[in-house]
Image (tube, rainbow, N blue to C red; front, side):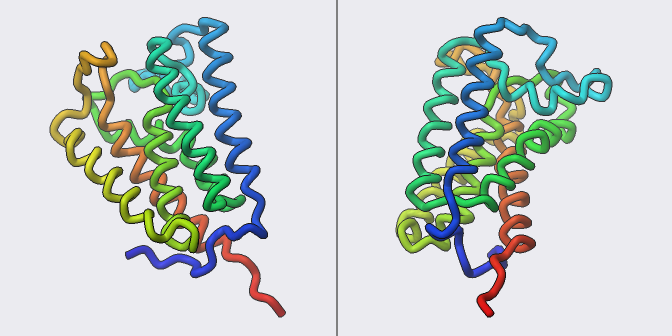
Length: 203
């Protein structure tokens, strides 16, 4: 069990930083697609130290329109959850930190030589949402279902056995290692922001 502040991001905390960051990621993805930026924005294990900005740009790059659309739909759902719970600045900061760190987690997987897409960061977002939902009165009842769904997906994908696999439905290589790494990074960033940035006690 994660020991965190007993006070969730209540309505006194504006949910707009979380929603704004979700919108930024969505708009960035659409812009990168429109500009047809190509793989110079992708994260490459062999050269990322010479191109460190790819820690941020790789999640915005997608392999196909349906790949991007699927991720944008998930991102939209997370933005709505941010309004419902609501998620405040601590959740937004955790997501901001997870943005490059979820990509950086791929360094733990020698099998992953190239990475693009928002899916790793989306898994990080789900972990962050769960951390806050488990403390929010409006979401406590369904927060275990969110955690169960995330764990079931990770266990089904078995990234520790198949870090990269071809998905015929999406017609792309799916980097399950990015999903697992993103979830772990999101959990750590979310917990740190909850613990270290507790609301000040009323005097």
